[in-house]
Amino acid sequence: MAEEIILLDFWPSMFGMKVRIALAEKGLKYERKEEDLLNKSPLLLEMNPIHKKVPVLIHNGKPICESQIIVQYIDEVWKDKSPLLPSDPYERAKARFWADYIDKKLHLLGGKLWRTKGEEQEASKKEYLECLKLLEEELGDKPYFGGENFGFVDLTLMPYFSWLHVFEIATNFSVEVERPKLITWSKRCMERDSVSTSLPDHQKLYDFFLQLKKWHGIE
Amino acid sequence: MGEEVKLFRTWSSPFALRIVWALKIKGIEYETVFEDLSNKSPLLLQYNPVHKKVPILVHNGRPIAESLVILEYIDETWKQGPLLPKDPYERAMARFWAKFGDDKVLTSIWSVFIKQGKEQEEALVATMENLKFLEEEMKGKKFFGGERIGYVDLALGCLANLISIFEEIVGLKIVDEEKLPLFYSWMQNFAEAPIIRDNWPPRDKMIVKFQALLDAAIASSSSS
Image (tube, rainbow over all chains, first blue to last red; front, side, top):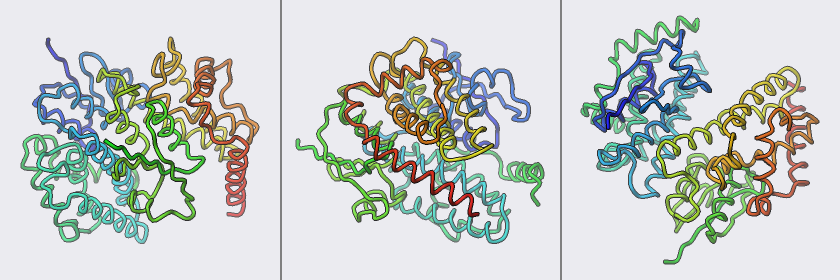
């Protein structure tokens, strides 16, 4: 049966990156449609009327929204190749817990990092590094968060690392110095084609970030 | 094999209620450990060092935190009385609605309760928009799960009790039976289902607790 997979996406979106990685891990062919978030397509508004956000996966005409939900859907439908979640229920619960933690905490703190200045920014930096410390402890000596295999938590965190590079330049702090184990982990992930082809070029992202600051009226 | 299941909770936490209901639906024996959040036990801090919150499910000594994560764990570990559908697309939709409930619906209803003036009016408008989506989703169904209570019903279920408590305290109608007939019916059907009905926290205690929260919120906003 012919599968039709469309991804409504926005290239700098961390949530979009997650889904791209998942699709690539499964070796799936799909059509990527780039959305202009200032001028959303009728298709996006039809497929995600409640949130009107990307990413949206459209599989044989049926939409799935919310990146964590999309990734789990991909894992459940194409379950015979490269499982993203572990098979043990307890390990699965841990993976879901950490993915939820990453999306809730890092997303919020990342926003604070570049939108604030002075003391507030310093406080955000500190908190961000604390979160990364927790994640580094969770990683321990394992090659990936999932253990021997790249998986759900790894693909959730990697997109934040592509943005982290931008924040480091913009706010003058170094994750390499503070969290070297995580840097090693991120380099290991970048060696995977699924990851390196799904994440944007650092320079392009940095230029976009400068535009974003301008739009928000931030120096 | 001897199963040891413990649930760390508070008497009123709506998120813990989800777990109580799930365990009862599946007929799982468990021990309850009530926590006082102003004086958290060393065990709580050991089992959920990241968030230091309840509910926490501890199964044979291994802790799981975050109520929706716990629900999926329970569903995957004990297969009787399935909470999530089998079909991957239906599962994705169930997860979507549960997340919508947490991110949007609970948030807007809480704002209706805790805010005043213009902010409250705006929260009411947002709540109506959010509940309309749920109303649409209820078409042709008794519960969000279909004929039986499922994952989405458990995720949204606290609303079947909390909404009327909030309405009583602030004197505002949040769910009008005429405007949201299907959602209104769902609230009745869910609240009165045997397992659910027998596990609500005492209403009078809830009214006292939430009135106190509201009084504190009003006091702090007028003193700032």
